[in-house]
Amino acid sequence: MASDTAVDLRVERRPKLSEIVVAAIRKQLQAGEIQPGQKLPTEGQLTETFGVSRTVIREALAKLAADGLVEPRQGAGVFVTEHISTAFGALAAEMGSKDSIALNVLEVRLAIEIESAGLAAIRRNAAQEAAIQEAFFEFERLLLNSEPTGPADLAFHRAIASATNNPFYVEMLDVLGRRAIPCDVTSPWSTEIAQSDAYQRGLQREHLVILNAISAGDAEAAREAMRAHLGASQQRYRERLHARQVFYADSVKAAATE
Image (cartoon, rainbow, N blue to C red; front, top):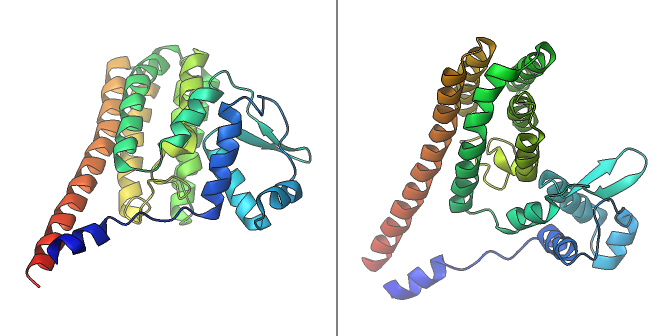
């Protein structure tokens, strides 16, 4: 009986309709059937092609945009991103929403963003520093209004990457897109904890340390602040994985005693 219970706990979730649409379009991108810069069919055409509602299509397009694979253009439609790393973006998007993948993403961000913070402290100009500050205060505004802070969070990190004056730092961060920001409600790793005021207040305190170091022109302090910020996120995900493991073990043990 205990083994039967364990099997039931491992039943896989059926994919949502929007996820099926996303997977199909992503496959076309990887196969080269849809080229960078090409316009996607209209919502109506996609609705007819996939036999789903416009709501499902909009949700799918939002996910593809969050992954950096497509971009909406006002009054013109939705286009495949003209990006030399589109294939890499498609691969990253295909990896799913497991916590273990979130840890992989954070590991990549550590490799990129620690050095970008240090270079930003040295190379930034006045306009670039202002952009970092503006993203910081936009995060604060959204937080005070209880609105999703993910876009401002990503803008903060992207502004730092831009301040390196090396476009490849920006490009690598753009590949990850909003998936890199767990407190964003569109992120596949978003949780109620990640979206809580206390959690995001902690993120903002960490952001302030990074901002202060860059503003002071202290490259080593900026690197260390970014390392601490992303390292803390890694630790939070490790703790989440461990908690899920303990919960599963306790559930199996409880079922065995019934």
